[in-house]
Length: 291
Ligand code: FES
Image 1 (cartoon, rainbow, N blue to C red):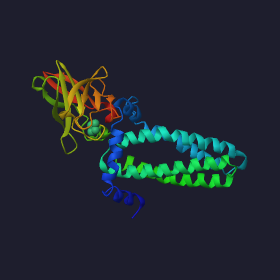
Image 2 (image 1 turned 180 degrees about the vertical axis):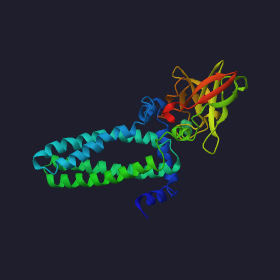
Image 3 (image 1 turned 90 degrees about the horizontal axis):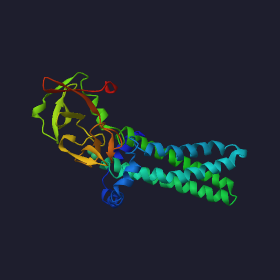
Image 4 (image 1 turned 120 degrees about the horizontal axis):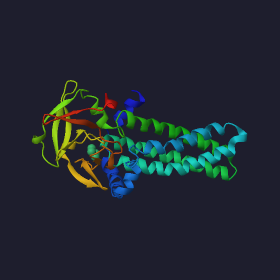
């Protein structure tokens, strides 16, 4: 079995689910405004993969500089930079982790434990260097780099194989036809709440969430960008001054006008379709970026 197969097996192990629940609840209790900052909702992009560039880049660079005796003071500076930058990166990861499915959370615990070990090794390296024990400092730093590399592989598996952080709406949109889709008469749509309509897909109907407000209609891919929650079962609500479509699963709010996230845990925008009226019927199609 390869490493990735092993990680998949690990994600099936439920022995520690009860033990990790208090940590999940503790993160979930953090105020929404703070969590949204950490999710990257304000950025329209997950923040964790942005923040991790700093410790990873600093530590990899330090590993190179440590191999050159005259550059070791610079390596120490980079290790310190990485240790400091690991704290906000871990906070953003914890915020995302708390709102993921259980399989992702299981691997997330292993990822966090490995990162904590790497952080401790680098902190030990700094202490050793400060005491003049340069050889020990380098050994600890290279050990930290190895553990951090393994942890990065786990994080990558969570992103690419388990789709944590990916836009589930973009994936669903790819199944839609690029032609105009007839969503039926405007007058059949309820006022001010989402309704389910289906779009022609490649072999299967694709759910769409349609919101009518007077003569205006906004049409979104029905699977929430966060974890595919059914947006047509959600509600319309004003969030941070904007009329939003709110997901029924974790309360992410998407601006009706643009699809941009106004409240997390979603950090990706919701895919929105172009709309036009034709003889009293609502027609919608994917914007060209999705085709
Ligand atoms: S599925 Fe999580 S907010 Fe929609």
